Image 1 (cartoon, helix red, strand yellow):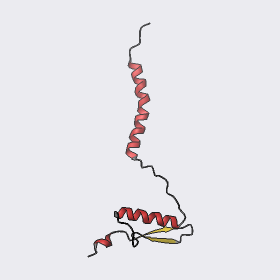
Image 2 (cartoon, rainbow, N blue to C red):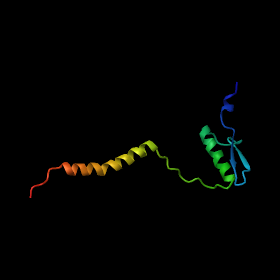
Image 3 (cartoon, rainbow, N blue to C red):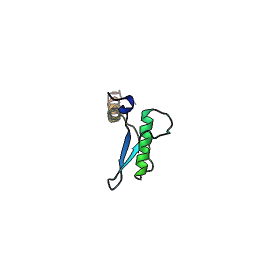
Image 4 (cartoon, one colour):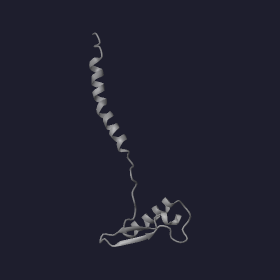
Amino acid sequence: MPSSADRWTAAVVAFDADWAPHVSPVVPAGSPPGSPAHHVARALRAALESVGVRRLGPVARVDTGMLVAFGKVLLLLPVAVLVLRLIQPAEPR
């Protein structure tokens, strides 16, 4: 049976432009304590820096279901306004 240390990712591999692999250990000796996800993120950043990717820009996290629903509302809004204007009684002059 594997120990609890064997269940986590041990290394991260990044490939450069020539497809040469660069391996970065996930928890190097003497690293500060933190969650396993934190250690993997640090190793991934180090691996990407070793192949020339210096900075990861912010990533917009979009819930596609919510985006679709918002798009449908934006499409139906002008139609609803037109329908309401048509059924509204005309003002006498």
